[in-house]
Image (cartoon, rainbow, N blue to C red; front, side, top):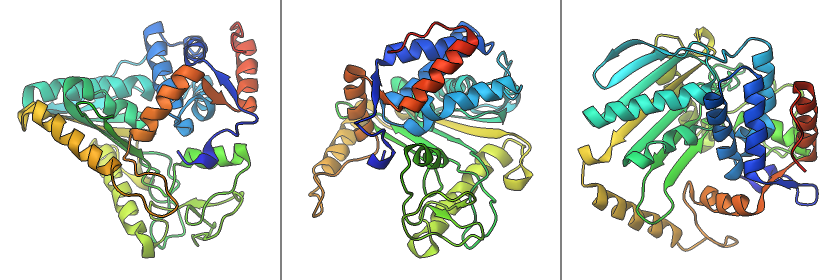
Length: 358
């Protein structure tokens, strides 16, 4: 994640990842979830935090989930149900269950189908926010599979040349196993930047970059700026001249695969708060697994060994910086903004949870 989105070192408070995990789990239990589901939900959030994906960790998302539970927006004890399927594919109604629980459930379904058919695909409707796409995609790696996960995010993105929001933020996650190198793990919104990063920018008091957002009338803002009161998100690419038609079309694809394919509509015509799509590819059904992983290692090394351009120290691939961040944060703690810890103190007092964090 870009440095501007990290908590400044001079104010960051580092917390052991196991300690914050325990508190998050207790909060979810207080929301009415079972201990198993609460533990899984905490795992998805801390997964993001230890990898430096603050936009989808506890800082940004936990208070939103608590608010949604309180308003009846998330069913704490759902019974997901297959409503249609054939062979390697299925459509699942999540029963308004937490996406941090139903997402892994659906990804596991796709993985099991891939064991039988070489590929498995599950679409989920009537869903809720499911955290970082990478978590679900990465589940496939332990099964020698490639994993893909995508979801319809908030309807905040204007079409190319548009002055109204018509597609969601719509992130896509892809995870590919390697043998010895850190795996390839891509996770990105199909908007110019993840919508949650705008919230981070506001909390941290930093400006947003040119081409990230547009004025209320759809005009791209092409200079660094404070986040205005009203704005539109731009597709990945920012402007047509530098490829926003590509990001916009990929965002539409997510609406189609997650929403329309599951029978819950898309864009302004969505009939689900969120919809998801999961795919698992069993590598052994396509090629030799060991050779695949060796080839992936060679490919990842060739990227890392690319000569950097002037002013840059190195070249990385998707998943490598997060792998390195995880090693550091699991050893030295996760840096949190003091405002986030104040929220934790308040919600723990409100829910009757002993404050355990320093």
